[in-house]
Image (cartoon, rainbow, N blue to C red; front, side, top):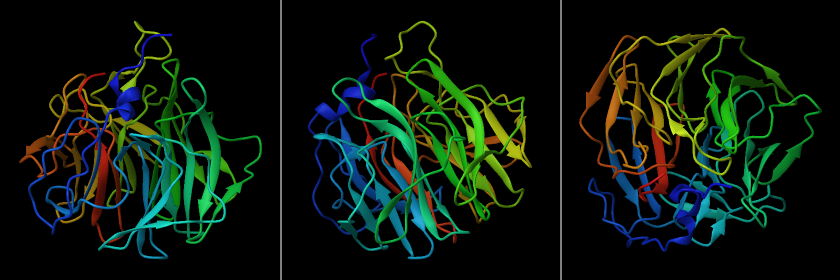
Length: 338
């Protein structure tokens, strides 16, 4: 099996968590590895909210729980291993919770709030074992006090990591993911509170994991950019190849967005809906091997490069947005390579 790149072994590095500080706009330099800083913003403008909270980690799952007015974070890869911790951010501080039940530890899972059923939904990810770990396709819900595994029946998305979930109006949409460097998915699924159902039709985007994804409430469409696709020259344990294409899903049909300029090949980036400017903002990520600190905006017709955000370059950060358009970004890794 091909040797995993630094993305799969960065948890062996010792990370510097920094010291507590008041909100500021300049990041504190940190040693290469998992990060533990917390940023708040609207996509284009960010400021540092905290250097304390969950231990530094990358590929954690994050969602905004509208019913309880907190952001919920689960799992991720720390310097000590894969996490099964549940944390909440109330706008001022992080709090670690101790629910009676919890999903198995994992990284690269998808998570989003289900407004119809007032729970946070968690799907898939990579669960550690004695070897490389194994992809999952279990579904869990969080009701503010405990996790519950949902028996969704035999029809469900295939096992995968690097999957993306988003709140799309009154439902949850799942997109993409991968099974090692072997099978990459470009499908979309919808969650109804009990079961998953196919939410799109062919032709679809090429399969990919770790795509930057957000919901466009103006057009009621799903926006997908980049991510990592099949690396045909490497083995199943390798990382994929960063992609540069953008797609939109509207009423179950995919359309590739026609643009010759933009962020370029980029994986493990984040995307947010800029409510004031009515545009998508894509930031951070990795080009393999270089990190990106660039910020780009898509207005529905063309890309434009924005001033770099105050957030330092990183990949695998957890990001979610509340219903008012305010976003929270946590952690990631600043270890270069692929």
